[in-house]
Length: 79
Image (cartoon, rainbow, N blue to C red):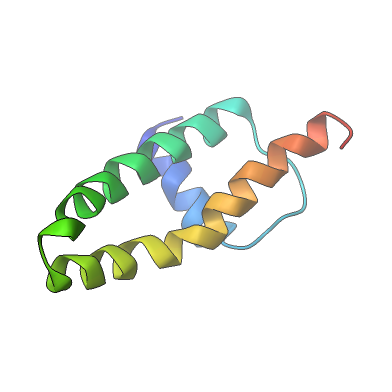
């Protein structure tokens, strides 16, 4: 499993799918990819309004896949 595969699976195939399970590798690869993508925009946001808007444009669509990726591993714990 690669980072690109995990990111594509979480964002494209399972965008807001809170059911089912996801493996440990999928979870961590997606977390790493989302962090790598959003961190530069978050660091540039204080520099001006344009960067703040760009940060929202990049970060907001990742909110649902991020939340779904957080919930799916909980199904393995019985929660």
